[in-house]
Image (cartoon, rainbow, N blue to C red; front, side, top):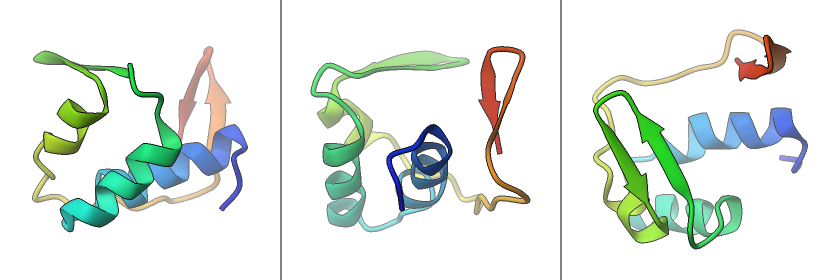
Length: 77
């Protein structure tokens, strides 16, 4: 996977938020996010890699339907 915006979005979706194994998820977070990452969710703000690693994995399984693209100054997959 590349470090292009589309590649990073895909990695985030498939290898961080789909990954049930904490060690594999932590390894991807370590190369994808800075130590002081701030992640905004509708009900909370997550600060730092360690807190992001502790974020529970959804019971849902995410998949991509097409390549990531820019839409209204945001990305979508």
